Length: 258
Image (cartoon, rainbow, N blue to C red; front, top):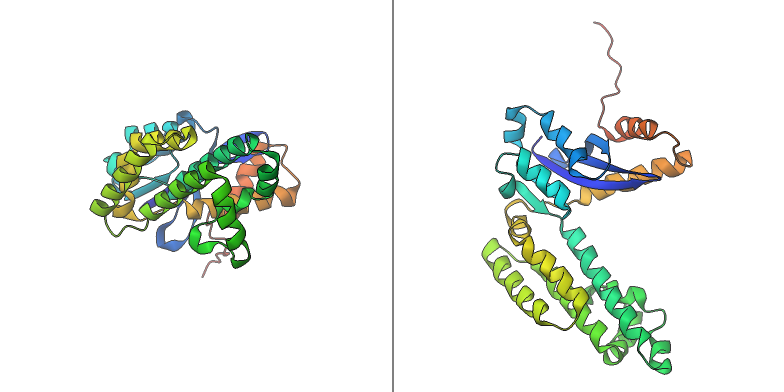
């Protein structure tokens, strides 16, 4: 196994830690355990041989401290192999924009607040993906909601970090973003900036491996489909068995003696 994704999945009353292998562009679940703490992930690394551990080239994960501690403790040269997932970073930034929007809208005059109504999902768009029918209204909103517009601009600037061509360019871009974000007056944005500053080096490893948790998120969607099809699971062990059966990449071709 060369390329792994570590992610969590909320399945009814329980949380699962799921490790997905994405070698050869094919996602398959290779490990799962109840919980989302370090104790849930440690047994996976302990089950691998030294050769298998050394053969791992990249590990994409969210910014969970528990998962980070586990990877750094058990995987040789784990700090170089760990990549924090860009989509989790984007999710944190989108939440920050939404928090700023709520705070600003609550303080607006009635007429301005009315204009902001229904615009929650507009701020999730990037500038180049905003539908044509929304562009005019969005420009008007930016003149009304100055703080939300500023938070949205920080989100867009951080998004372009992942488009940098190489690590030196990305490092410069991210440091400039952090410098501006940490000095702004928007606490939700500063909170994300502090989180990124603490994890700077494992955001920059993206340029060495170019990996994300997209495959793991796809697996999570398929797990949710299993849960919906079964109308929920009373027994977590049954759910985990079904996940391995459907998503474990098992070879189900019958073998007959020659």
